[in-house]
Amino acid sequence: MFDRLGRREDETPFVVQWFVQQGIEVWSTREGEQRFDTHVDKLLNYIRFWQASGESEKTAIRVRTKHSQMVQEGQFRGGLVAYGYRLEHLGRMNKKNQPVKDLVIDDDEAAVVKEIYRLITVEGYGTNKVAGHLNEHGIKTKRGTTLWRGTSIRAIIANPIYKGVLHFGDERSEAFEHLRIVDDATFDRCLEIVKGRAPEKKEKPVRAIAQGSRNLLTGLIFCGHCGNRLSYAHNTTHRTLADGTEKVYDRNLYRCYRKISSPQSCDGPSGHEIQPVNDAVENAVREFLARIKAIPKERLLAIANTREASVAEVAFRQAVKDFEEAQRQVNALEAEAVKALTGESQLDLSVVNNMLLKHRAKMDTASETMEESKARMEAEEQARKSNEIRVDEILSWAERYDDADYEARHLIISALVERIEVRKDNQVDIFFRMTAEQFLSPVAVSA
Ligand SMILES: [Zn+2]
Image (cartoon, rainbow, N blue to C red; front, top):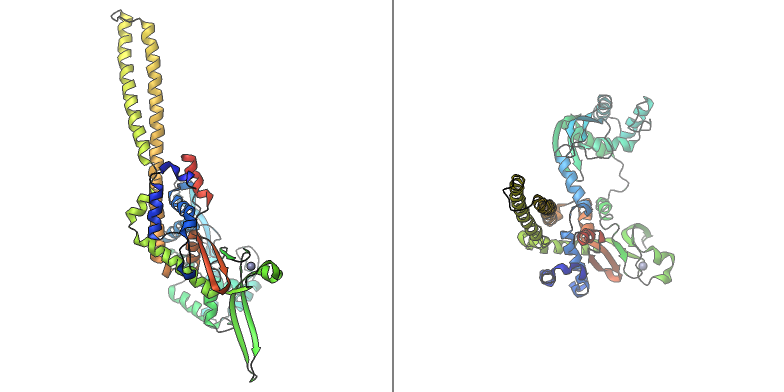
């Protein structure tokens, strides 16, 4: 890993030391034990993660930022088109000057949407009855079938698009009137009616929390004993107490299915309570973000921009000088050639021509170098900009983490954390990114 950062041997250890002093590293939440010594390479990778340029960025967070911007601007961000709308090219072009489609109301489907709201808010229909009603009348769904279900009706009336509001996760745009099908009051009332009537199997508020929290660490969590990926499991146990009453125990667990399927292959427990594990990870991530937040933005940017941006600039200035020099020579030789033709020159025309050829070639080379170094300068400027975006992004995570929903927190954790290992007694080891080679490779290529 050091080899790869070796272009700046003088600075690398300094940067690492400084990071370590700031406490940005891999750590164990167990007894708050700091284990950065063995994970210095991961730190370096993390720095590289900031330095890596443009194309290879594949973090979901970036996509999310882009999407949320599109949502705020009222643009269709891809995926399924909601019932009641279709895509149409209204003349908007993208940056590559290709036509882009926009969301517009589909009059036929919009009439059906209005009817759905009317049936629920005025006629007092339940969602299943609405679905049956549409099926009976041969109204087709978006997929061209006549298979409306209660769930599809519930999904429709919960979508804020019908009051003109685009959404992405928890984020909402302002209302775009040209996309509105129902008024705010109808929308809200309809949602309340359906929610009030929705069949609740168990009226446990814990449920809703568990639904989100079960996905918080998806794909990141492993058994610290056997290395197997842990799965979320919900476990309900019924027990009859001595006095004859039945008690229900609800448990949310991370399960090691290897332990369950072949107990001798894993010496850990078969399950871990989900909440303490999630809490430990979230605390570590909060601490991580808080430490980043404590670093001035200029310092973060300076670290992200340690690439030798000035080299291209020097090369460019030199090439300009070479070009101008060659140009001067060519001009002088051309004047000399005229003189040679009229016999005013001491030099023979063929000699002058030879020198002209040489200096014109020099001019061409210098011009090529100019172009190249200019392109490099622009690429570096681009890299600086994307570093700035990335730093802003990380800072914004630090700012918004606590208010973010589970989906957003999951994305942030996935961007920062590579792997979480859980062992008995809720011991949690959190390995922060990056081993991500894709972040390193473009740097290696440009080096
Ligand atoms: Zn295991």
